[in-house]
Structure formats: C-alpha cells, structure tokens
Image (cartoon, rainbow over all chains, first blue to last red; front, side):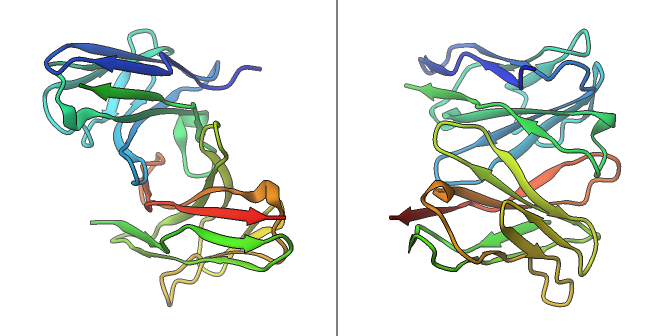
Length: 116
Length: 113
C-alpha cells in the first residue's frame, strides 16, 4: 500500500506569491498533521486534523498560513504572501485511531519550499 | 514549554562500534518519548518509543530507556552498521489524545566501513 504522499516534492516561488502544498495521507487514516522543518532544525508542529476539522492549529506561525481537509482525506497547506523565512521542508504525517498515543504517525518525504 | 535537547553531530563511527546519542527533555506533563530516523532521501520513520518511566523501547538493535529521574532517553546500539548512517531525532509528546510531537534538532550519524 502507498504511504503518505506529498506534492510537489520541490517548489520554488517568488517572495509575495501564494503557494499550495498537498498531502495525501494513508487511506483510512483519520488523523493528519503538518510540520515544518527549517534547515538544521527538527520538525515543528503546525496543525492537526481529526477528520475534516482542525483540532489544533496552535503551531501556525501567523494568518498567512492556512490548511484545509474538506473531505477528511487530502489536505492542502496554503501560504499567502510568501516570505523568504517561509523556506523550509513541509512535512505531512497521518495516523489511525484518531492519532492517539499508541498509534504511529507515518511521515511523507516532504515538500521543500524555497522562496526567492 | 516542552523541549528536547540532543547531542550535536555529526557522530562519526567505524562499523561495529558502540553508539550512544544523548537526549534529554523538559516537559510540563508526563510525556511519551520517541526516536525517529531519517535515512537519506526518505521520510521520517519511527524507530522506537516508550510511554512510561523505566520502559525500554527497542527496534533493529537500537534501545532507549525512559529515565524520569534524569529526564533522559538516550539511544544506544551495541554494534553499528554502515546502513545505520542517517539523522536521528528524539521527540516527545504530551498531547492528550493525539500526538503533537516536539522534536530535537537531530543528530547525524556517519558510519564508515
């Protein structure tokens, strides 16, 4: 079976532009997470979905960042008015059973975003 | 807030050497602890975990013991292989009902033949 798929794998955009990053979770996984990994750092939590709703968006850095999961499967992370500081690898993960402690979160390979 | 501190890399070892990667944590709650590994060109993979004090997580010859008294979760392997070369991340989660992971900065391990 397929793992977590993220597209595109690489995205280069100009400062000020809008970008969308897509995540296809493992089929049947109800929990979906977005993380951001800056160069030389560990991943940082952005947002968690349980089904279609964002259960915790406390990690989104500001209102330029927004994520949706309208049908409880695919999720899109949207960044408006991109800044050079947004350059990072954006990771998506999914897990079953509502993402509880005893379940494993499976990560995608990430989208490398470069803002020039 | 919650945080994880792990030793800086790179850690360079010869094949069959003993490995220790130190990890300590600060948490307000009672966390679960994890080690994730990222092989070149691949996504993060869960290596092992422990959910309560004195638990030992183990997988692929790697071990780590949850030490509440020292707030540590050091990763060890008795004999490393070239194929163990990767970046290792220590992480914790105190989320009630879901895994909101807090990661360390990662430690790169390089194993030479």
